[in-house]
Image (cartoon, rainbow over the protein chains, first blue to last red):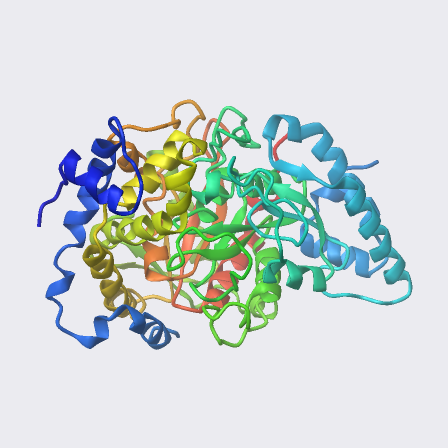
Length: 65
Length: 468
């Protein structure tokens, strides 16, 4: 996965949400998201139903005292 | 009017009102006198409704004379972050966009505090849309730290923390998405509880990130925090995310003390603090040992990874909530808040879901690793005491998010994991700024945090110190 969106890609991505990123706004937004994007990558290799987001509450229940 | 009454805790004031030794009206007047003297400098209030508070105090006193008691906070003046809606009242949410927005309904937490007899003095300053760890607000003016107005309050519950510290009211509701209760509590020398995700209803409160947002109290004592949580916690038909968990009697549970508790001290990640903070934490560990707790070192999972999942959740959720205004009123956000929201647009759905899928397994891993070795984890709430307003002001640029991440470094991971955290005042720097520690517990185990924190406050007096 690419850690960092190009300014053009960032502008296009925002435009898909209907938001205009002019000037250096696209550059700054892409830079801000770059680190976390790289860190989160990899969870998709977890092939287990227990990792589905909706099951957080069930796991939370199991983690009570 | 004597201001001495304003120095009591909420619990003690409630006891005095119940015993006929104090009146609600006298308490309101004591608060108003302090607000008159200090709020101009601290900028804690967005809107003060003195006349309403005086009228409701008189009603509370009249009912007390007739032996009619509404609840455990009968006649006690509180004030809350300006994001808890009250029908017919403006809720600015710290923003220009909602400067004149009138709430159509009342937050469940306010309804529950009303039913418990609490009074509401008005609405409090906060970071714009609760998105900011420092207490800066470019629309309403920055809130200032009661211990030194040159320094930040922390955020986003800025007015709540500095107002409780300055004894302008007896307690306050804040909200905590990444540290917005615990961090300002640490910086301002008050108690702050972020409950377990789902412990408290969020109905008719302003959302920032629905997977992370928690409602909790900022107070002068742990006992007050336990009392307020007892009142606001529990299931709510208006909020399906409010957990269907029984609410223990947190105040009764305080008697359990700290003897025999295993207090865990992490060996990594949470160790990166300045010298004065480490000294305060070391002294607090010794205090717990004297109380009969067993202080044990515990290994912890990879918290750097846990911490980096946080913005993958908050970014897209907050950008989704604000998307329409980003399209139509982008210029009405401050530079900092707009830039942070726009960063959320950069996160693909697959990355957001990666972070959400990891959440349950990471919680299970953390619980197995940490809470098999201790009952409560003791960590710093911040890396240092409060920096100055000037040195922590950031309005934009490519490194904005990195700079903002520094402040809530030790609080955000527990929002992602959904675990409860209690910030407790524990000392001061040489320059007179407060430092606290954070106790973290298992899911839905706020009672153990309260018991430990209350025991600590029975042998220390940091929480009794008020700014001059």
